[in-house]
Length: 136
Image (cartoon, rainbow, N blue to C red; front, side):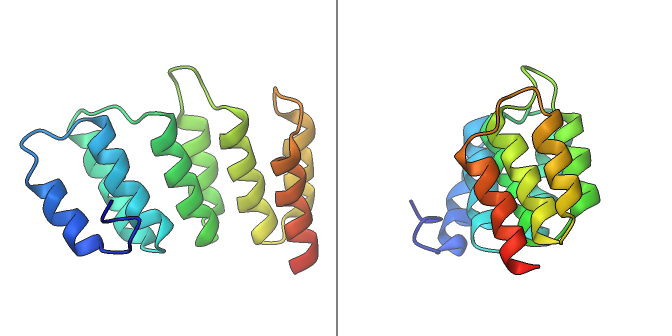
């Protein structure tokens, strides 16, 4: 709740009050930082989460990829996408990576990903690519 309102200070205090945060708690705080543009903090928390032995879930990876997208971290985004195991990436994860490529003007890579991903492209796939075309 605090994160959605932009009160990351309160969200962080609430998170720190949890004795042993689970995947949901970690994901909530990472999402908060990622969606409010605090990319360094989001990615640092993600590493701390992994080092503490808590496994990221699908939504955690969406937040991490969104953070990469908003900060033009192409190499990191690709590494995070490739690191997904349990269940593998979904169409939403691929759409985030298409957005990463598109935002930095790597439109051919975005298009190649659309055609090579193991899913039919959805509206968000094309929206992400077209957003890049508009910017570049």
